[in-house]
Length: 451
Ligand SMILES: Cc1ncc(COP(=O)(O)O)c(C=O)c1O
Image 1: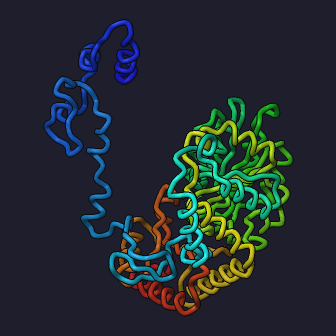
Image 2: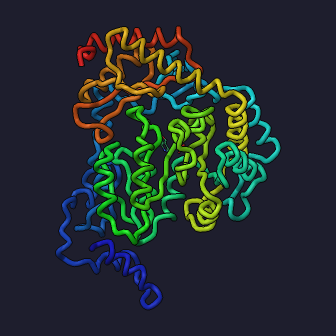
């Protein structure tokens, strides 16, 4: 209410040249503030509202009240923003100390591949550091177009489109595909970029319980036949390390006239024939309508892509605001991703090695008495009970030289937190043994081997 009032005042400027402070004074006397002290400047590191703004709610109030990160830091358990002083690899320098990296998405280990690095340098030499604009206008390089062609060819699709981030891939596709009368039916554990892409569109978003095909069917059944529908899911779930049930999803999509979109951020380079992704893992490569993925994981760069039928890609190219109104991927990111893609094509044994190492690590943890979540991917999560215990585990592991990720609610239920480890092709058996032994020691110390 208050905001629309202020907004209206600014909107009226041509008729009456009211200043911002005049606008504020027009506010109703009933606008009693719950944070008069903030407005009057009595407290708050975020600074106070204007002296004239007594009685108004400060939009920064929530920031002032946000203390959770500070509380965790005060306990010495804060698990985020550790600084790296080296390249991403199996062993890294983090905050000045060597640590085994078990918390990255550098699945094929190509971030320190000599050809990929050289490609990044060569592209800067040839094209400079940035594109200064959108693909649509001045920022469309020949290497962008070439990379799209190569991705489409690798995945056997009509066409591909690349974006400046993986997050942007889902935003770009989903924001423009779903119209007012359409439905997105998404797995509840979908990545944040899927949620945000759906929200940016005019379509309605409905969520089914994680990998629950009965729930998916219940929702599909309830939708009007004359509405457009698309089922959206991660291919390989990044936190649980489990694959989406694509065989059943494809069957249900056919039965209820829905399209399918799979976000293969974590499966591209990892799963299926030569690392092509989840659809190939299940032998369903012809059945998925749109596949999105990122350059920031197996492709060792920054950016993302979507592949689909050429009419769909053409529609996205000319209708997607997050694609049109943003600068194109940098030359160096683009050429590095293209070189990583060439490397993947030339080395189909790399995803195979990765999956073998994932299995090796999983078995090693089991042999040491731990209980990783079942699965077959190189993402190996270990149950770690509640938030506090999980923070403690991650801190103890960090101090012993192993970096892992914590998974907290709402990504998981209250007492089902996880320590997420991810194996890369850069690891080898001896590093994984070393890490597994440290993990087992810490888990046993905290009684987590029993769960
Ligand atoms: C499933 C999934 N989709 C999309 C993204 C976004 O990719 P990027 O970080 O490259 O923007 C991520 C990244 O974590 C992801 O896990």
